[in-house]
Length: 133
Length: 133
DNA sequence: GCTGTAGTATTACAGCTGTAGTAGATGGCG
DNA sequence: CGCCATCTACTACAGCTGTAATACTACAGC
Image (cartoon, rainbow over all chains, first blue to last red; front, top):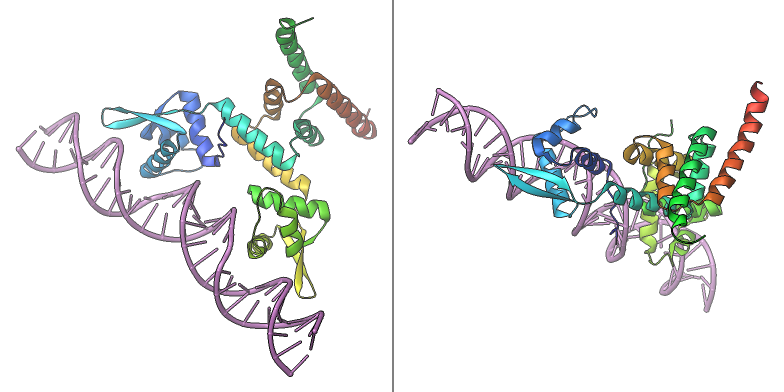
């Protein structure tokens, strides 16, 4: 599944608001997107949300005269599909090459990596422990 | 710098050919893109390359009656800008959150992480050693 | 009850991308 | 020398995105 959701910057910005707040009316969304160094017209935001609804990315319910939108796709789902698309396209599908890149960039230092390794270890203990010796 | 290069799938596919082969004529590019489960018309490939040239992504020289294209932007540069865009949009700009995600996905196992950590250690030794104590 | 206001629906448009046809140039082969 | 194959330039067009105006609807307050 995961149905190849490729989303633009702005579409993701909208989803982030919905993930954070759970749901949002058009006005609330407009407010939330403001200050993000731009100011979109109310109708613009409405159009964007309508389109996302048509694509099955978000859903809406009616509340009085207005629509309240909530996300259908989850954050992890979007992360999965976008990270994997990026990995495929630029790192020959090899996730460790992506991490390698981050390290080369100096984006991840030893401390963070150690922390992540501990995380991985505890994750494995939890999952591997119940499975076999 | 790095001039916000956001590239589509197909544009990246083209660049990957150029990075791999150094340069390519339209015919060679068409051939290289074939089998990628699709078949593009010669003119389509020509159009794509012309547009990339207009955007300063690739350059071309004339060889006889045909153009031979070569990349201007480097692979690392594109990786940097696209990974950083993704990190900003989906991981609040925190690269370690991206790695965290990969670990959660099971995309990186302990062995790979250990290998990456060694890599990082050797990198730090090299860079930190020449700079100060 | 009427009017203003808030809200949605419809329509519009430009820019980018994927896709390719057609037209025009040119070089090679018979 | 002339025609075919090759190659580029130009044009076209649909779909998606960002952006928003306009038009229509309906509640809320006076």
